[in-house]
Image (cartoon, rainbow, N blue to C red):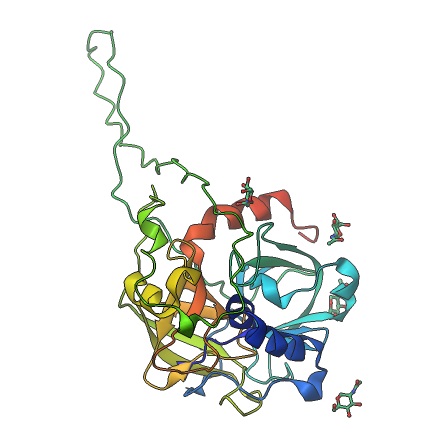
Length: 337
Ligand SMILES: *[C@@H]1O[C@H](CO)[C@@H](O)[C@H](O)[C@H]1NC(C)=O
Ligand SMILES: *[C@@H]1O[C@H](CO)[C@@H](O)[C@H](O)[C@H]1NC(C)=O
Ligand SMILES: *[C@@H]1O[C@H](CO)[C@@H](O)[C@H](O)[C@H]1NC(C)=O
Ligand SMILES: *[C@@H]1O[C@H](CO)[C@@H](O)[C@H](O)[C@H]1NC(C)=O
């Protein structure tokens, strides 16, 4: 059950080859929707991925994930550049059908969206959609949490003599390290060239993670079993899936991703994952990569072919964007609640 990670984003990342697909998908009407969907997948069951969002975006098909009562996270490359498309954006939840119907299906409009300001192709490929009405009957997908050990706050030495009072058993306050990672973003001008990643020599670069120390202790998810879901195309030649599909993939070590994509892969901000004949593909973009039900990735990009054993699918590494998500939500207070 591999999803071809090819998705729209992929195209962007890889360059010209992909962008034509992106264009195709985005400009298509419903009947033009790519017929590929998660490759090697099996049908999801009702209620299995309640937070899975089906996005009909002015003719384009994408996935998304409900992370708050009126917030869906998706891939920035799924979205247009202005608010003019908003009337043509529709979000469906709790549905298995690509038409968004079915018992209990929920439909929402989009009142605004925010793309990462430094999005470019597969880089910073993340966006939030703010729904026009809240959704209160569906469980949200949890975001990754920092799993660094909790450090007790230092208790300042008191000059006071110990009184007879019972020592206030101050619980060590579980302060999370607020040390933000240095925002040493690489210039977004480093757009991937038109070269396909396959042409890159595997050993050209070290994973960027070695250059950008993260102060946060999120797991790296290397070798973790993950699930991808979507309505995207089900083969490299096929059309979109009528039904929501899911597939198992394994998150690869950053060094493996780098060996496949060279410096197009940024291990700090991306994940790559592959499977045995499974992958995400066109139309799956924006959908979730889940590890134990936690949203760790957003389907973003891939090689020229989906489910290519030598080119894993690329995902936005959600743990690197938890601050962005929180700030963006805070700066865009939900108008409907
Ligand atoms: C959608 O695409 C199909 C096939 O290309 C075309 O026949 C149809 O007229 C299009 N519909 C709209 C509303 O553009
Ligand atoms: C969309 O609308 C919001 C609110 O009116 C505005 O702040 C924002 O700049 C608009 N975005 C674009 C891309 O025009
Ligand atoms: C929200 O959008 C949906 C889908 O477009 C629409 O059916 C519904 O009436 C909208 N709700 C409000 C409060 O505008
Ligand atoms: C976008 O890039 C600029 C320039 O590198 C940087 O100052 C800014 O913090 C970046 N924005 C985000 C949200 O990371």
